[in-house]
Image (cartoon, rainbow, N blue to C red; front, side, top):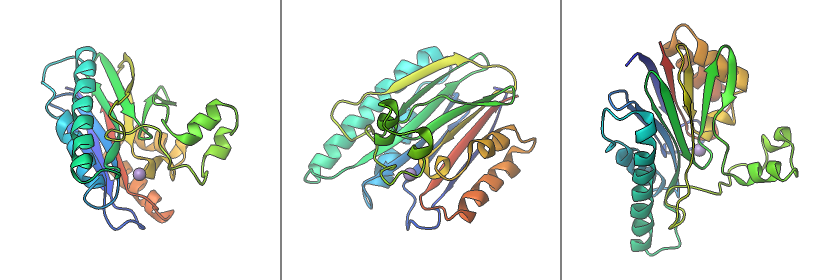
Length: 237
Ligand SMILES: [Mn+2]
């Protein structure tokens, strides 16, 4: 399909298990990062279920057709997670934030719920495609926090949407064209809270994507990696 791809997922330095999950299916033109929450027997189950459900997308669909299909699949995953949490007695979170990218040589669609992010690097500039569904983003939108204050905020981990968190799941989506050289980054908050924008951009534009992925992981680890860290870089050749 003319895409170069690297993926990484790492437990980090503070957590005992990795509740993130990564999906890379170039054959479907589909990539995703999910970040599970709820602890043992919940978070890692939720993120795995989300990426597994997305994989039942059919091949050969362009992003425009794929996007509503992915929305339906996320709704299915949501219903299953809500039912599983209820079966366990309720009162427990069993959810995952997610960002998914469907792309071909002409266009892309990006869907998300929660604070996993997607970025596009084009002509040397970094664009954030997603807008966090989080408490701090809400405060920024209301003008009560500056973006600089939002970064490193003590309540920075409070998300307002996640697959499995509520019987009614709302997913946001953006779509656009794909040009040669465009690079997409999907990342869990364990990456985006630790790495700076310029560092994300450098990784996305590196001649050697695999080496750049290693540099990005090491950089997060060197800064203490308080959370699981996962990302996918998808670059149109
Ligand atoms: Mn996380």
